[in-house]
Image 1: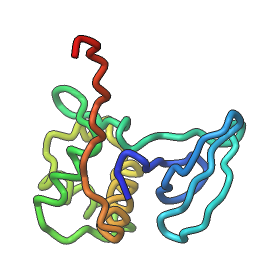
Image 2: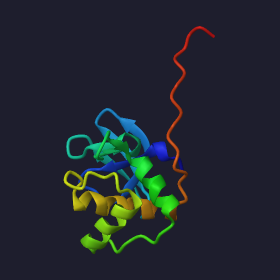
Image 3: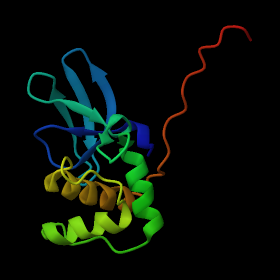
Amino acid sequence: MEYYKLVAVSGLPGLFELLTTKSDGAIVRGLDDGQTRFAANRSHQFSHLESIEVFTQADNANLIEVFKAMKEAGTPLPNEKDANAIKKYFEKVYPAFDFDRVYGSDMKKMVKWFAVLQKHEVELKLSEPENTDTNE
């Protein structure tokens, strides 16, 4: 499973692998349950994990940078129901967060998503940009 194929779908919990898109929505497979379903554009929005950014004290950081920091830290993930433990975890793992603008619910999602990525052994790697150079 490739990181660039993963999406979050509004209104649906968890992460999904984007299988194909259609004019009126997308067919996705849940990473947790493996269930394939159609998600309509009318009732859902799709966010590629690659495109999600997080507020920091300086420039925004791509979500994958946060995941990489979490992996490198090697510390156990906090209990997702303990907001204080989650905040303390990110203060250690990624202190550059702008904690005034990154909500606790967002940090909770990051912990859940990272656990899913680890469970499915997803390589934390952005897709390669397409070569648009025509002078080859």
